Figure 1 (cartoon, helix red, strand yellow):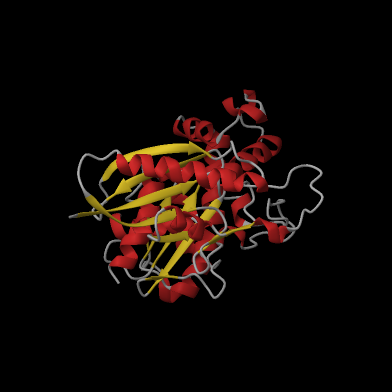
Figure 2: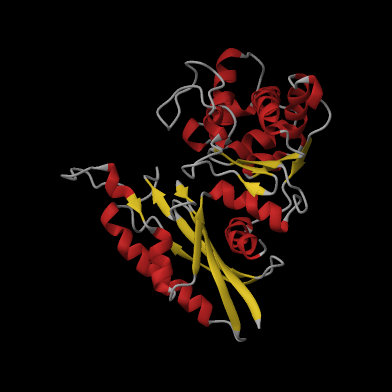
Amino acid sequence: MKKLAIGVDIGGINTAFGLVDENGDLYAESVVSTKKYPHVDDYPAYVEDLCQAMHALADSLSFEYELTGIGIGAPNANFHKGTVESPANLWKFREGDPNPDESRRLFPLAEDIRNCFGGVKVLVTNDANAATIGEMIYGNAKGMRDFVMITLGTGLGSGFVSNGEMIYGHDGFAGEFGHIIVERNGRECGCGRRGCLETYVSATGIKRTAFELMATMTAPSKLRDIAFADFDASMISAAAEQGDPVALEAFRYTGEMLGRALADVVTVTSPEAIFLFGGLSKAGKLIFEPTQWYMEENMLFVFKNKVKLLPSGIQGKNAAILGASALIWQQENK
């Protein structure tokens, strides 16, 4: 009988999920709203809605199969405990909540979903780790035992694989590369600190860079006509493709910050390859070329010209679902 896993990607707006086989073929997919359940006390209703929708999807297939497990990618997910802990954009306290105690924002997601599905295996990890495992099972990291995944979206996520295993650390939260400090007293970060890498290298970061450059450069740029609220990173890519000097400098600077940081991380993990995934990586050579140059320029001599910088092999709209389902196949194959 065919074996399938459900991959679930919990985002701030929607939760996408689908039935996936071991080859990465997607048989059915669906979505429920996450933003409909914004508060701590909405969490039980969210779980009920998600379980009903997953059961409906599972029942929609016309052939018999075995459900091997459910893999979930979510913000602030703890692989060891199966929990989602104090997520920044999910299940917050209502205004005026009489007991805004953060310990109430520890959600036993794996256990709750397992109970809905009669005890089937449920694994959770953060979304960047899910993408990393997806790369290892379905993508360009097949057969690699040491690599780094960098996800460049609204923020900067990352996953580290050493000797064929994800590095989770003793508490389940290892690999927060986006929150290494690259500029002391630098840009304010959503984490509460200043100068984190993701404030420079992300869709949000390159937007901030472009506005800083427009204040300090006199070069003409079509970006000057766009209001901050209407501005997004894809506009910088489009302008750079047309030779816009501000946009080109924004990419060069972003690549410099990322390349320097990657040179440092190579000295710790000595990966075979580093993969770039997500929105900003789709800018192609605009981000890859400066990143590669500054990475090599700052690399310790024993590592020079040894580490490949590569695009993800699972880039696409179902990547998050594939990545989450890969959690199950990785465990099955051990």
